[in-house]
Length: 125
Image (tube, rainbow, N blue to C red; front, side, top):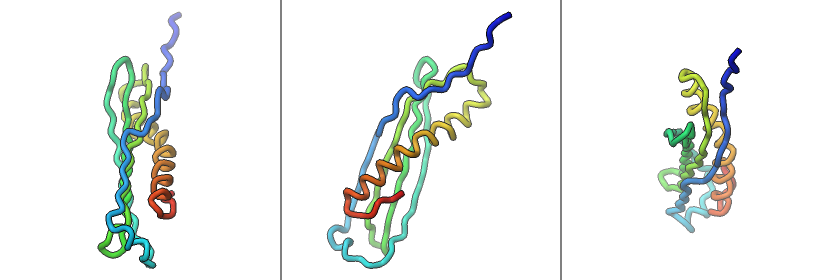
């Protein structure tokens, strides 16, 4: 009897690939009393590396405005290297497009929350 090959899904490394924050209308914008309109944009990309390793990057862009004035713009790209082997091809899409970004999301959320606080705004959760 031959042994069945077991699928492998492992996190090799999680890292912050890129982070930027802009507060173009400071310090006057801190005097605004209106609640800002906040837009959130998420994007996920992946690429094969070597030996069953894949890099997945979850990029989150947050824009906050009051009227036509920008309060802040934050963009964070949280990345991870994942070891994925012995997985059927039909399962690779959901792993790379759903499972890996879900793993990265708490890290990018924490980075954005921290940087918005350091920029002088309430944390974006």
